[in-house]
Length: 272
Length: 334
Image (cartoon, rainbow over all chains, first blue to last red; front, side, top):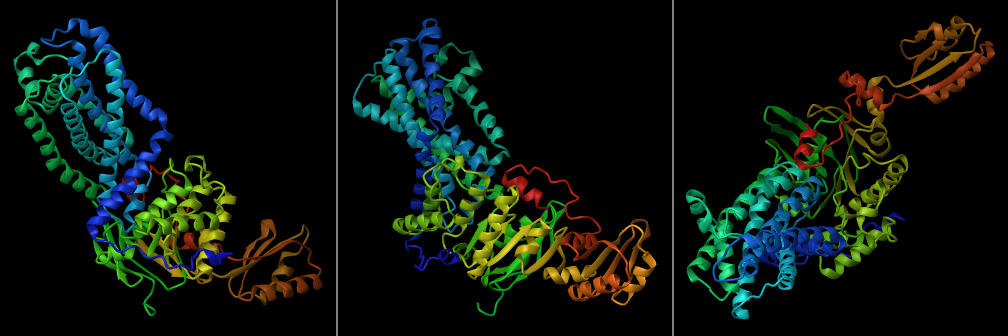
């Protein structure tokens, strides 16, 4: 009865270069997260309901009182909604990591001969896929309430590209937070709190021109506004190269700072 | 490797701030043996396991597993050891099969081998029926079995089990003991930490008693028990039995001081050849017409061992419900 614990076959790891396993391990873990999405439908539903509520709230409740020049408010609004959706969605990266740490899964992963980085990259990759899906849903919701994007499909694809890059960038901030705090609950609230001023004191829902001096300076230069403006330009056939470059620079800058920071936080966390 | 111990730790130190989680811990386990690391909560058991499984670096000292240095050769070592921690470290939202396949892939087995191995292990651990259900629906015992299966994917020659039965019901515990015994019969070297004295007694060939980050006693279960004073014949006379007459009758068999409790007509007689002497004592008392209410040969339990070694009972400290994060995990191990 006990003889079949040890298989007679030789269990030999496949020999491949390190870089191959860095990618392959990340994909194995990304897949792990993705197959779970349909199993916990409520998670996806609730992460979609929130932006849908924002669409309805701003389209029908506040929208009438917000003056934007040149475009309909719903067309103005959707870029803000898209950016808000992917940025809020990125908080799931940190929450997921905090959960894995809490459940001891990270310890198991670390006791395996796998690429260490995969625990982080697997999450951020799967969150991009998830966010793509949510953006598509929001796009459909937008069209239903009167959103009519203008310009070329190529520009729209570029806009979606920027959204996914920002999702990826903010995921690394979220990952850093998730590993810096000690509980899942803390990861949940710490992941969100700072996003509120960033998304509302921005051009996401209202033009910054109505804001008082210092706030306006902040709102016009912070990453969320630049991302929103870049995406808005691309969706409404008014692309502005300089805004797009600044938005991309923010994403790249965030990645340059937060990938090493997340890795460092991870190393510190697991050394305890 | 043949001449080297499978697990060797020498003078391990680990500090958390001012706390000494490990304070010069030495451990040794020969190939194919089961080393039981026994100690209360906070004795340093988990910290030791985390160091030996490359999860944590010691601040001082040296450790080798399978002849490989746990710090310098951590990467190679990981493919040769299995670890089952205090809680089932499996993904609740994946099925049992998906969990095992994923871990197989992360061990860098080919896709086909990972699948095949997953199926083998599911069968071995009687999880075939639950294989396609998410782990969320599993009982505690099933989760532990799946967790253990995950540690056995590479058929590691050395297995670390950190409190493998904590939180299981008695049936789950017995099932786990059987699984572990089978592994050992197959030649796996096992390091097992436990707070349960009975568990170490049942499974371990060698026991290291750990307290405050240090080994305070080691040996086989029997050796440790002898340290506390070996076997005792305990007899209780029926009402009206003459205690002095009984004392005269058993004195010849005693290997030390007889403990007398006249109020309860109770004698505790240290003996060296318990079973034979038990029969002789029964004959003698019967011949002397001394009526017995109870007669037992009692071997000291590891509880007695712990009490006599540390001055406090093994389970005296309250069992703190451990918050499941890797930080308190390390903290709880101090």
